[in-house]
Image (cartoon, rainbow, N blue to C red; front, side):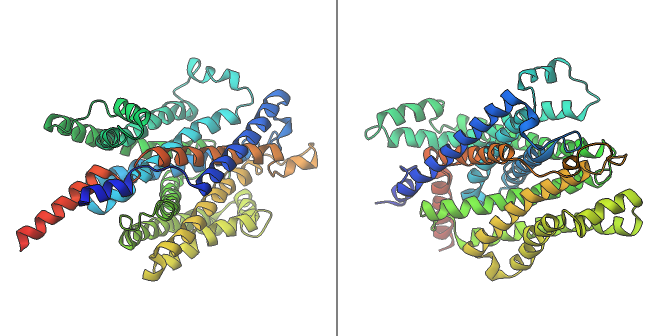
Length: 438
């Protein structure tokens, strides 16, 4: 068996095993339960949630911000790696693009879930106002979805053509669908030239779109002029945080796919070391912006901001705040600074820590500020002074996370997560270089 056949056999999509089937069923059950909770929420109204006049965004918007942040890894990060032609990126970029597409699609759906009247979604377009950051979000999220899809799809074309031939005899139905999706790819010079130019254009477009997406989200908060959000630091703070969340998600998913699909020969310790260095750099940058966001105001904060900071550092939200800072940021930095910490399994643990810490970090950004309005909260029930998600909110949020995981799972099942053609080409190039040297 030659090297190409070995690569093809290793990288071609395979059926789910028992664990994969159980995992898929588990995700579907969570989604169905969340859908039932959402239907009940639409029928009864937002009263089934714990959102009230003050905590009017709650967990849904923090979850939306998390999805937007996670999508950053497959847009800006991958685009930069593609444009700089880093060869070590090959086994990782497609997984990153899959995560990005799943995350940004769910970000759009999460906004609809947050709307008490989803039937009024069209009003966001009919009565859009360019002065409103909400309108910018309505424009930028669909744009990001489209570009993320194209950045995933165009590099897939050679592999889809390979899968068409591979399944022609064994699974003709698969072969037919892969053939349609390959857009009659033959690998001609003209097709390759068009493909390379298209990928480069999309990569150049998605970088400013990805940065704008994070910045607009930051502006949604900072333009409200509220304690905790009134900061010129918010744009850079959100971008650096998105970098951390996205790379953390990539590390976690890459480790799982590598282990389940037995791709140790393609996704090696070297790749984990590289992505570990990228993650620690992201964490250090984010840590710097956290110092700007929380430490400096301690010395200069007015009374209301001082109350807000105390609620985070030593008050009601202290456990969540310190969990997100220590588990989601400080410990990962310490672990990743050592070479042993950048081995596959430690990296997987760090990735989980970063993802969980990043999710709770978004919760800390959203909720405490809403409960520190301009005027003191008076003349309302005691429950309005505090917020913690209701069972409906948890079930619906869990369903969105499960849906994102299901999208990733389905794509991993039917698409080659490591590029077949590019891997084979790089192997041939490596052989040629060795022959030339000898």
